[in-house]
Amino acid sequence: MKDVKTPSKLEKILAAGHPAVTSECGPPRGSDPEVIVKKAELIKDYVDSVNITDNQTSVTRMCSLAACIRLKLLGLDPVLQMVTRDRNRIALQSDILGAASFDIHNMLCLSGDHQSFGDCAQGQNVHDLDSMQLLQTVRLMRDEGKFLGGGDIERPPKIFVGAAANPFADPFEIRIPRLAKKIAAGAEFIQTQCIYNLDKFEEWMKLARDRGLHEKVYILAGMTPMKSAGMARYMKKRVPGMDVPDEVVKRLADTPKEKQAEVGIDICVESIQRLKECEGVAGFHVMAIEWEEKVPEIVERAGLYPRPEL
Amino acid sequence: MIVADKKPIEEIIEEIKGRTKILILGCNECVTVCEAGGKKEVGVLASALRMYFLKDGLDVKIDEKTLERQCDHEYLEEIRDMVDAYDAVVSLACGVGVQFMAEKYHSIPVYPGVNTCFLGAAEDRGLWTERCQACGQCILARTGGICPVSRCAKRILNGPCGGSTGGKCEISNETDCAWQLIIDRLNALGRLEDYETLSPIKDWSTDRAGGPRKVVREDVQS
Image (cartoon, rainbow over all chains, first blue to last red):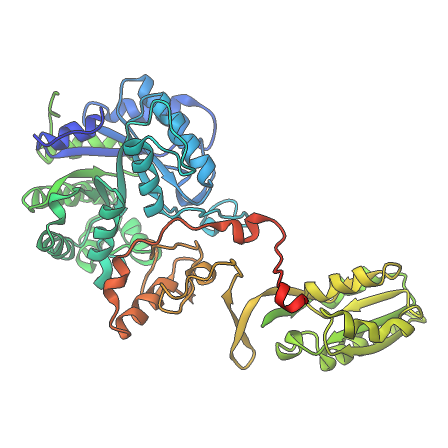
């Protein structure tokens, strides 16, 4: 077992060499805590940790930190997603301490979608730091016990820190240098963009292995089941940085409508089974968007259930 | 240069409603080059306003004048003797010129006739694009001469973000991804390995965040 630096359950599972399973819950467009609790109840026995998205697609929602606290109160291991779009370095550091005060032990550092996609297109964006500088900030606070301003932190946060990677985004020639850069900035785990183009992902993993990056960071492969051929077409055409091969769209489109969701789950399960054999894949991040009830089936059919006890 | 764009004439009419002696004041610098507030645009706006008021049967005197610069005391002095004859000035200078005019001539209301947009260049005939946000601490040496502060929609110093597709930004397929440009440029310069150097957290105190900025040059003052 590798050394662990935080009490994070996710870190312990990965360090023990088990393929980790994470999932995500999007907070509601309202203040009802039951929404997040219900989503968490559906998946909690099938995953090790649960990401809470931070105003994803720039649509205003319940804050990630509050939703993470809800999960923590249920005894789960939340992953606090934080984007640099909405907060300056004061607010980011402050929220990190707030999370640490509730013993939230995981964070995913992101830049966030541009606000023009959301419900406040006329708003300012902040980007005082970028996602790599946020990684550096968390590591500084944890490892050195220091604020960016140089002051000492009483009871520094113990946070296992991660970043996103998109193996498919352009330009392809810097995909691996960019991963290396995130590791250099302090990333300890990576959750990738949704993978549909398995060949291209495996090529990316090979390039990562060639530089030994898979030994420096835990890479969790991102998986999102398609609900329909329409969703596949939308993801292919409209979602920036998404690579959906034609054969995936075709397989869904050739399926009768009422069976498409089932085939979407099949594709997801088959992808996990194939990537379990890919050296350097340390686990799976199953993002069943507004379809959390399918996570148990996917995890079970992919042979990732039961989850290891620590 | 400072790039500006014409304000809709309806907005200008709304601003000057009720005034009867109006000076349209152009500027011969940046706004002339970007064809928003030079002598030609002063003439076009003045004619349009005259026609509008004539149509409404209103007796409004509209005069035209274009100064060499409106961001300079020396040139603004040129209108000292004539400005009292007006009850409003519509300045087609950038926001700097409008304010300098207002600071100098306290008793005459001055209205902006253009929207000041950005620091940019004439990329093509009729196309001006942003190149600088005057952050006060130039980092172009590190980024192959292409500025992520002004040209990345997220001002990301260690880009690109995950939204870069086919060389374009996630906000629009008509907007180049600044980081694609930076990477292409580093590649062309044989410096792609520089990409892996982490760009440090930026001191934004020299940017807007630090409050109104000034440059003081004692060597020039003496």
